[in-house]
Image 1 (cartoon, rainbow, N blue to C red):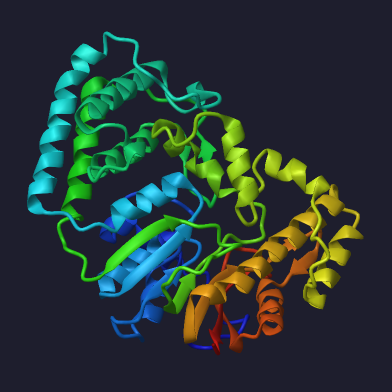
Image 2 (spheres, rainbow, N blue to C red; image 1 turned 45 degrees about the vertical axis):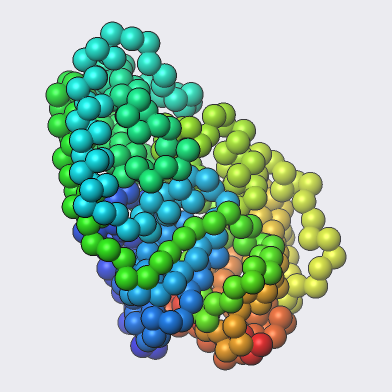
Length: 410
């Protein structure tokens, strides 16, 4: 990547999740945790296919899928069961026979919808669900879901026919009142009633697009497994390249956007589970994840001086909940420090690292994410640490995205 100055850097939507929409499997679901395939390709293209690739913060499996498409063996970590499921569905190779099986099964499920409409079908316990779908649309979605379960089984069972469920995930969003015109979602003032034929036709159109992008066989192999990135264990496997984009310290809760999928797929059953998951996630702020910050402390671990200075400035500001936000920032980088401490357990000597991260600001106090991560890496023995500005994130002149790179001497 070329060095750029803050004055010349642009927003560049091609380096965001928006770039992925037309890129086959990468565009199956519109999720803001995804970062640009273009960024990942630029890094991976410099390495041969025999280099093992790791993404400790899988998200939508952008790195793992891109690496598998390039011919590499790749592994991702995540703690969210829905993202683990989705990533593995995206990273499988599918036979022509399997794609035909999914197509035929979907037709069978749709054929059962008229009869199922007369029954009381399960709907997700999503808070304020009428804000998402009209009563009529919800009835059709619930009947179609029941039909898909009868043919394919529950998605959480992680069978290889997850393609039908990926299409259903996209359907529930496209028939909802939710809008994704920003990094977070908003709602239309009214829900829209969709007739049965519209919902089933739309589902088949989405499924056709999903199946069409599933035909190409992946040259490499990608997998997503459940591992807490703060405590990476010895695995008997080492990686020569790390390409990842951890959550940013900006109080955006990614699980908020994932909730509709997770409820419909039965990866979530109640709101407290979302809060528990966000507490385990780095930078999580949903529900109890925020309330627990009042009782959290770093246990005396030595941390970079730039971090303690930053946290002190935020705590001393006159903003509402300044101390809480200072603790939030401290915990974010404390968790990242734990991550970087355990990462060498799976690194080859000379492994190259690329962290796509963003800075943030609290009450006028800049949180210089690349500088703090650089300081952590220096404390932990990483080499060749550098930071490159990638793009401006929005209209705020002070917010940027960076590639923090390093190597592990081994």
